[in-house]
Amino acid sequence: MNMEETKYLTFALTKGRLAGQTLSLLEEIGITCEEMKDKASRKLVFVNEALKLKFFLAKGPDVPTYVEYGAADIGVVGKDELLEEGRRLYEVLDLGFGKCRMCVCGPAEAKALLTHHEMIRVASKYPVIAKDYFYNKKHQTVDIIKLNGSVELGPIVGLSDVIVDIVETGSTLRENGLEVLEEICPLSARMIVNQVSMQMETERIREIILKLRNQLEA
Ligand code: PRP
Image (cartoon, rainbow, N blue to C red; front, top):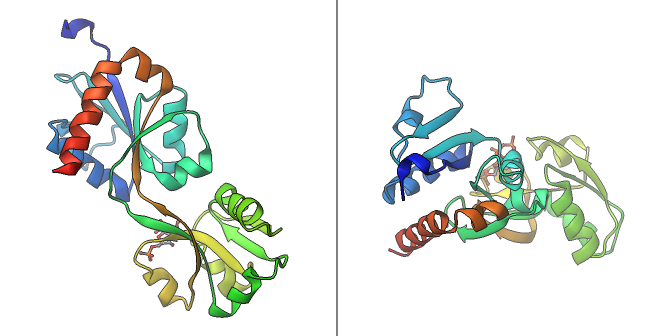
């Protein structure tokens, strides 16, 4: 293929914890972006001219949005954001890092509140996941309160009875006198692809998926 005619493939990566691991994995299959390593840079979009690739970092919940609308062809994001956002896109690969669990957490005493279909208050950064779990899986009507972070505060200051949140090491819970009461689902980083890009750039995207899969299995 004539590289001059090749269009850029754009990656939307999740800022923060997942970014470093994503870049290392991409580097292992020869996809590098030197520009991105310059910590002092205020640039938002990074380019690898030789490979005709572009990269940008976005907040987790926004990654599926960029991919659904085709502003990015490929994304790397936590399964939690995919479940919460419910966007139309292809989830093509479990990248195996960023492993954690979505759980119902609270003080030990709150466990009883989960067994008798009581009307309780649930605080979460993930209202869609919380609602689906309580309404559709447990058939328990609850009051869901959306928070934007430090959700563990909910039961501590008396805003909610329990929380639905991500648990990785469990240390945030332990240090705040809370525990996992029920597990909702396991989570990890996923590669996602725009549905039109998958049809238009099948070969290039399939090659990336294949290389990543082989690298993950190695
Ligand atoms: C996440 C999550 C928990 C914590 C879990 O929060 O919401 O608070 O990490 O990790 P642990 O089990 O290893 O302690 P994050 O640090 O992303 O910040 P936030 O609470 O402001 O969302």
